[in-house]
Image 1: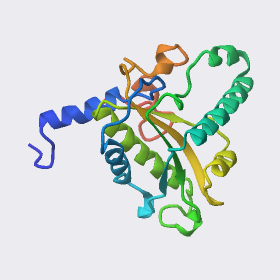
Image 2: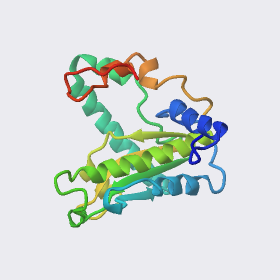
Image 3: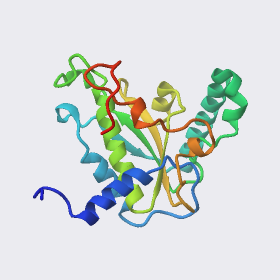
Image 4: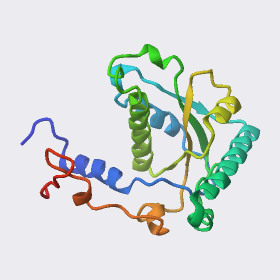
Length: 219
């Protein structure tokens, strides 16, 4: 037995959170319990980061007028996204793509300014700051799911405009409007799969051996 492994029950909980995590758009009224948001952000802050640069920053949106302004901007971008989709525009407009006005908490998540000063692990791949922040957000998502709380990542916004709305410094980069709150239920599968927008691909489509053009045998 591997002495570093979790117990069977603990491992089952980890894999269940991964399997049942959902990008939530539908929320029910009600605040989070005291301490929950802090625990989720602590989970995010425990995420791995290249060169330990910890590029993530979280802005809690408490002003109702500011929340409404963010919602208005996201809706403007939603319409522009529909226009860019062409034939699928009408189908797209039927989808619920955010829950900004309904959720308990809204967070704007961004990357720090002056990121060029961090070279460790980023000399040839500067985008690793975004990869690091994505790991942090996944931690947030999994912690929230484990506590029965929904979270949804909204990315339909113009970074420059959202930066202005939230008073972020030049050089910083907003990457997510995160909606967090109570849910009536979690989707049984990703919402876009339930809505038949797309479906999850089988492992055979994403695994290769040694070369990109050499499909891997099933593990």
